[in-house]
Amino acid sequence: MTNKVADRMGLLHTESAFQILARANALEAQGRSVIHLEIGQPDFKTPKNIIEAAYRAMNEGKTGYTPTPGIIPLRETIARYCEDYKKVKTCPEEIVVVPGGKPIIFFTMLMLTQPGDEVIYPNPGFPIYESVIKFSGAKPVPMPLLQKNNFSVDKDQLKRDINSKTKLIILNNPSNPTGGMITREDIIAIADMVRGKGIYILADEIYDRIIFEEQPLSIATLPGMKDWTIILDGFSKTYAMTGWRLGYGIMNKELAEHMSMLMVNSASCAASMTQWAAIEALTGPQDAVREMVNAFRERRDYLIDALNSIDGVKCVKPSGAFYAFPDISSFGISSSEFADRLLEEAGVAAAAGTSFGDFGEGFIRLSYANSLDNLKIAIDRLANFCRGLK
Image (cartoon, rainbow, N blue to C red; front, side, top):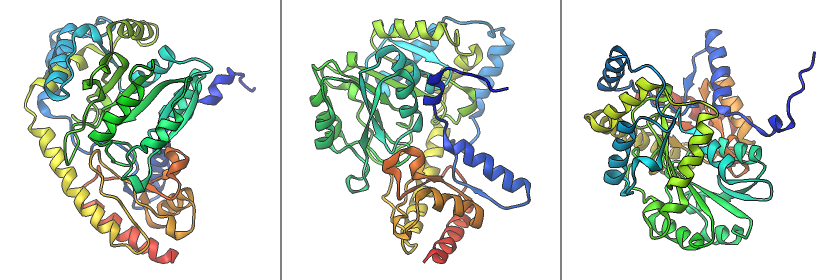
């Protein structure tokens, strides 16, 4: 029997990193050794104080439904955190707590776009952006992030792409998959391009605590931009809470009401105990975050130097997140073939650059959310593999 589903289901696509993980796990089940550099989640445990806060909340009976946009104490805490860290002044009525960061992307598209609208999104970029833009009926317009620009925005190209149909621009800073940063000057220039034109910004700031140079500038802090910006953030990356599924959006009150309506019609609310744990994450000791970022910095410095020592490989040093995006175009094979063979022949799981859009061709993504020892093994295997391609 063939199930007939709605045509729009054909517009959705998956994250290839999870498909690569499944293939890598299958090889390991056969006895093969695989170094996992494909999946984008910290290899650290959730800090103990956060786990204990969730346990306390459950023991206190905080296991039922919560208000759809999130419990007031958490939204108050997020407001204080965002003012202190992002320099964005907000309030609980402008915050919607959701199960993970992706609902903010999905809800934003459903809330703001319709057929005929255009959404400019980073390419290479998080693949869910393009997927849900298409699902909403809007037209995805790629914003090329090129190596020659250190994977920041080409402002001239962006200016040409903005038109009367542009409804939304997505900024991801720092970026997945490149680890690149949009400079403060570029953020200011983008704000100047869109101010007063009725164009919204979805500012995906999920990695903005995992940075190695200067603090990124949130576009919502610039004059006239706060009411036209939806900030996406969460707890998965900063606090190693990927499985806890907790994120939030910051937007003007009217949009927050609409997003809460989407939330009540889909997930009702985020889990109660994770919300109470999130308060502890934001207000408790931040030592674990600093230690994790320092570990990522050490791994980054080793990995980028090691990649650039391999004949035929070039890699820009990322400024944030935990990804390297090396250029492997000199080997004369597609990114997909390179990544497939790297896994099968060398036992290193990586994501093809084209998993993140057409402008990722010629690159692979390596997640350095793995131990330094494993990164050294991966580099040895990658170097041997590359020598075999010459």
